[in-house]
Image (tube, rainbow, N blue to C red):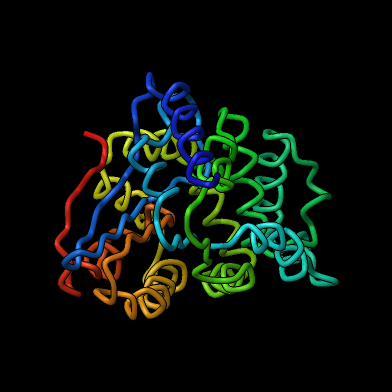
Length: 287
């Protein structure tokens, strides 16, 4: 019955998506008879060219184990954990910012439809996340077209086990570790980045649709200092590989990994890490 359900889902997916650009950043790693599919996801999407390929969906449904950054249960907890760590009971924004900086922040907030008084108790990293998501929404980007949402929409037909590489708290801790500097310094840096944020948002989509991991990585790390790269990318990549590597070559099964595309490249990324472990790598990304 489960196999029949998977075949029905694959047929429906094919009918819905056969006209799409089949976009993605996707690699296959082989350890002998063992196969790993590594999908670099993008968390929000815009337009029909963001649909995943049938190859990715079929691999997701038919793998023995699937790892995502968070399980669906942890995804549901994320908002609660975020608010628990990102809302202050004192030391609010206006008193920690220069008058000019506070005025510039209020102007930016009002421009995207966020009342300034809603953010005065937020930690800077949560303010940044809220602003980015609001700007993305105004540009037509939606989580429903993100890679994770597309995969979870068909998860009922999975053959294997769905696992998480970290918890919601782990993700929030990484954001907190990357929050370098005073409120003034962080807000000034945020305002500077927002000036080019819309352009970069569309550039990242284009690079992902075209399967251009190197160009996507250059945007993701361009505005981060060494400590921030360590917190949000490098250390998490290392932790994830410690979870995954015990499975390398231990069976003839098929495994699937779906994590943010920024975790695939760079010195500690999953692609070089799998290659260093002896896997035979094939790039199936969009061209």
